[in-house]
Each structure stands twice: as structure tokens, then as C-alpha cells.
Length: 255
Image (cartoon, rainbow, N blue to C red):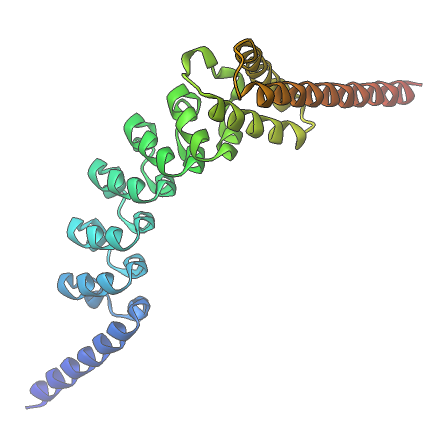
């Protein structure tokens, strides 16, 4: 009789807990391990709030049905799935297609996957920061990223870009230029400046070729050439002054 009442009380407590969690899914973090590992209950809770996925058992973080439900709610749920599923190409492809920034939670292996990274940057150029070092300098991927968001250029080793391998139009060239100039104007780091100069000179050549073909774009191209020239001259003068100051300091310290 005592055991029967105990079981009845436990069932009542469990039902009460489940009702509370159903009203506020994030309360799952305070649930018993048994509740966090209940397939049916967790599936229903994750359907209500994908963020509850972070509190489920490790076993259920590796359950593709539950993970799919969370990803359908928000692809950023990828951050809470098991390491095994972070390496599942179908899940990660779905997530980055919905939100390119979900790439940050993919496995290191899939951050090297060209198709996945390309999909991610086509959705959000800033996803480029999470790609492997090799793909950060892939011409097609860089181009796709910059076309979405010129700020993506900050994540590229710019001197490695070969414009001759990239079929760019005027609008893309302008985005590349704006991104490079933004970086140039925001740094006095010699290494970064040396990295930026080659791409700006290549872009200047691009505009020079375009100005030889009269069109409505010519005026814009001339403006960009002048902008690049001013930026390079200004930065060169500034760096020369910094070098001069360093030499003076060195001479003063040696005397």
C-alpha cells in the first residue's frame, strides 16, 4: 500500500514538473536526468523552444529527429547538438542554408567543405570568418561573401586573391574596393597594410581598363581610382612618418 502511494505521488510530481516545463521550456534545465532523457517529452519541448535543446541529455543531443525539430525552429540550434551531428553534412547544410552564421558551430571538417562554406557565405558574407584558412582565400568563395557583405573582406588574406581568376563586375569591384579601403584606413599595422596594397593596386588596374571603354560607369571608375590613389598616398605618408619617428627614438636611445 505504501509503495502504491509512493508511486502515485511520484507520478503526480512528474506530471506537475512536466506541466511547468511545458509552460516554460527552459525550465528543463532543472528537471531530472530521467526527464531530460525522455524522447517523447523532449521532442515536444524542443518544438516549443529550440533553446531547450541545450539542456537535454547527451544521448538526445545526438538524436537526429529531435535535432531536426530544433534546427527547423532556428538553425543556430546547431551549437547545442552532439559533436557527431555537427559533422553530419545534411544537418549542417540545412542549417547554413537557413543562416550562414551557423557555420561557426559546424565541425572543423565541414568548415573545410567547399560546398557548405559557399552556401553559408551566399547567405551571409560574414560567415567567411568561420571557414577554414584555405577557403577564406578561395576566389569564388571570397567573391560570393563580398557580394553579400563587403565587410567579409576583413577575413581574407587579401594578397592571395587573384582578380584575374575572378569574373567580377563593376558593383563587385566597388564592394571589394570599399572593403579594402575601410581596412586600410582603420590600421597602421605594417603587415596588414602590405597585405592590402596589392589588391588595391589590382583594383585600380581593373578600373583603368574599364575607363578605356566609355560607359555610364566611367565616371564612377575614375572616382574610385582617385579614391584609391588618395588612400595609398595618405597611408604611405603616414607609415613613412611612423618609420621616421621610430628611427629618431632609436637614435635617442643609442646616445
